[in-house]
Length: 261
Image (cartoon, rainbow, N blue to C red; front, side, top):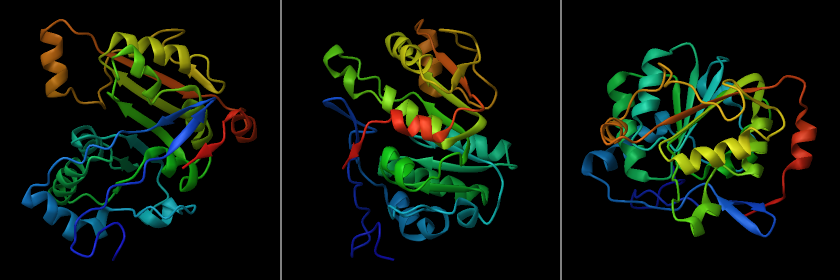
């Protein structure tokens, strides 16, 4: 296969994609490719055909991709894959989709999935906004998980954060009625922005009430960095939102600013 590999087998970086926020543009990532270990490169060469989903820009039949009509859970920005691997191990009744642009993290998870013998996980190495807009049908997802997105902690960089109104509206479109959004951050200022955006998004209901958060759910494992941060007195905020029934995709789509690549 030639996509997403070059002729010498190296993984190609994904094309950045944006949703326009007025005069701003929000990217779902900033490209940080990092370095492959030999094991991670072998994972792409040998395991991508089994677990990888090549971005095509066309609607994808997810049931066909998995060979299953089980509910679909999406994790955006899975990092090294620890949470996604944990979820797949403990929840075999649902299919899991992961999106990550950091190639070494994808390679690491490919090896882990092979070690586990997983059959219900598929991965994208591409921009999440573009995948959601063009490949995932409205109402196709049972749950979306976004754990510890880049906080862009400098105030002048806050506009680069993933959780913005247009992106939240996009998630509402992709979730089924009664579906769930789970976001987590260890930055108090980002938690405040998440509440500002998500509590105000038509179609999302905060399970803990306005500006509320919950204890870490059992399905999200505690990370090494999280444990270290808690020892230093840092907080972690888990936000759970239910996708309201009766909020039509047409209404959500009309609220979404036009996208440009």
